[in-house]
Amino acid sequence: MKKSVVDHFANTVRAHPDKPAIIDGERVIGFAELERQAKALAAALYRRTFASQDTPVIAFYLPKTTACVVGNIACSLSGGAYMNLDVKSPEERLRAVIENVRPSLLITDARHEAAALRFAPDCEVARIEDLLLEPQAGDHNALDKARTRLIDTDLYCLINTSGSTGVPKSVALNHRSFLDFMDWTALEFDAGLFDRVGSLSPAIFDIYSFELCLLLMRGSTLVLIPDTLAPFPVRILELLQRHEVSFIFWVPSIMVNMANLGLLEETQLDALKLCWFAGEVFPTQQFKQWQRALPHTEFVNLYGPIEITLDCTFYRVRRPLRDDEPIPIGRACDNTDVLLLNEVNQRCAPGEEGELCVRGSSLALGYYRQWEKTREAFVQNPLNDRYPELIYRTGDIVFLNQDGEIIYKGRKDSLIKHLGYRIELSEIEHLLINKVRAVRNCCAVYDTAAREIVLFYEPLPELDERAVRTRLAQELPKYMLPTRYLRESALPLNSNGKIDRQQLKMRILSGSL
Image (cartoon, rainbow, N blue to C red):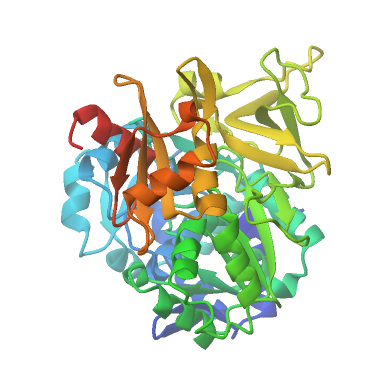
């Protein structure tokens, strides 16, 4: 019986001892060597945290490199739960996370040790280079006991939210939810599609945690794409080509950028068989550029907030889409149920808009050490008055179309009341990008004090603000038209790679525009 993600690792190593597990620049490490390093580090971690009766949380303040992957695997082998911290985050944010979580140990390297000691002064800090050199005689039996003590509902990792409300929350995810998601992938997709993974997401993303599961459980090779390549998308595509990457799972922002720059026609990605995207709306026009450039690739739109392990719905894009048609988020993944609830907590009729709520094994355990926030988001299923059953209220508004596909409309908190009308700000964005085609990208924000809609946009070279206003006025009623148009060379992104709406809102509130 496999009770934890790492229970599969030994079988994977036996099946693929010499296969590359990680490709990190010029460095390639095979599965047998990866296991050796991870066990050595796990022994050192166990000696420092084994006294804890609960699953110890170990924080990692490392760039996404081989060392980070080894550290995360070692943490699981030692019976602990990992939490990756963003080395680019402000120290104040990191201090808030550390004060809330209070990890048993913080692992860093020589380059980042000084910063770690500043934002985590009360936490034990150790350098990964030193831990790997510690003797490990006699520790393997203890490690085996630590791993066999794990059950599937034990904590596997913590993923920190982007902190859109100002205070990041640490989402607690268990082994069962990852095992459940991996079972779904095996049911829906051929294992060979995941053979080589183009790992672009930072280590703080849940996407990275899924990629780690592919390595541990399926023997996938992780091709690590360094952060330094972010400003050079053509080099990212060349990396995928050089290493014959077969699978990517990306946030749409960078894919939109690649499409806008016309890069897809310049690089042959013959090995890329499966492309997943999630995290935000993928504008249909730019998505279709990917489809046209890669006719041999299957594209899948996934949906799910961090509070649901990875994703809870999916849509295999197999029918033609109009340019002005949003890509559906599809239907629920296996062993997951989604409820579309209206304002009186009843199931929505087809075409009726309501909040998407989720039940099943995919749900997170809650927010670590944040009981009140957990109780607000994880609530009793209003359709079940017979026994306790938690659902997660996503705050996302969706509806079922005539084909039974779930269509994403926007956030509950992006629905505004303006001039007496109920307006969904994402409708303005979708129209501008996909139908009017007047901007590269945009974000509509409501200035509550001034009672006006503000549009931040990345312009197309041939269109000025007047042209954007004119085209939008031809499509929208007057009450939905933005009052202010603010041109940006590039919209800001948050730590999760999505448009940073909170930063744009703060700019409005501060009067810095």
